[in-house]
Amino acid sequence: MTDGAAAVILAPLERAREFTDTPIKVLGAGQASSTIALHDRKDICTLDATVAAGNRAFQMAGVERKDIGFVEVHDCFTIAEICAIEDLGFCKKGEAGKLTEEGQTAIGGKIPINPSGGLKACGHPVGATGVKQVYETVKQLRGDAKGRQIDTEIGMTHNVGGTGATVVCHIFGRV
Amino acid sequence: MVPEPPLSVISLGGYKMSVARFWRKQQNRYNLIGTRCTTCGKYFYPPRGFCPDCRREGNIVDHQFKGTGKVVTYSIIRSSSGNFKLLTPYVLAIIELDEGTRLTSHLVCDIDQVYIGMPVRRVFRKLGEDGSSGAIFYGTKFVPA
Image (tube, rainbow over all chains, first blue to last red; front, side, top):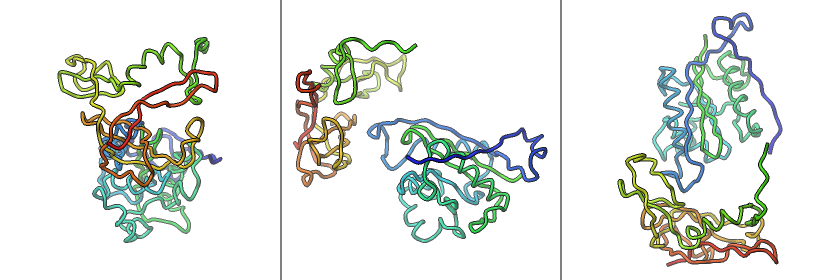
């Protein structure tokens, strides 16, 4: 159990510049639910909810995997990060381990994952974690992520609840 | 307003269940009786009264599972709670029954014995007791076939 908090301010796009000079836009969102029991899942290495939620977010945003500059994924455990990279469609099932070993998920790699350090590095105050992922995304897209800056216009977040029973994905972009 | 729990409640190692409900589920727990949909042929354990694929086209009947299957995957539990503390280290396995349904169960064997794909069969075992003067409750576990 960890303690922590995070906050974001949401505003209608038309009014965003009343509050900030650098608003960040929600391009797409996706949510999906699945089973809680591990034995009810088709494949124990796949979260069907991640696959569905990711696809829904991409469909709404109208962008492709190659357009994403980085992803903040829900790495409650190390293997969860590996499975998330595959389930979100950034590589084939079974290849994310190799992708990581090759350095492709580091800053400067093909698809940077968790520039913030993710749940493993920051701790995981349940609930606040999802908002923290958005915070990191906003800092990155504003060019305000000192020491870990990625040069991109589109970022993605992936958050899991109920041991994989529910997943929410968002795609953000500069206005 | 939270409803008052029924007066007759048994504590299944910390998880409370009313005696009436336990009696209703007894055949399912003791004898591995589930259900099956005769429309699509899918099997359900625990029993479902409704086929999520066929919905109103489905026809649900009781099914006595053969009780044999194989290990899909497993974990060795070394630190547990309640009634299970006395059993550690023990094997917790996801078992796929011959009919295709999967469930999670204690697999009663040496922790060195278990392997993915190992054939297993069901047995009737004591699961725990509600304190030294309370009800003893039983259920299904699995052993190497």
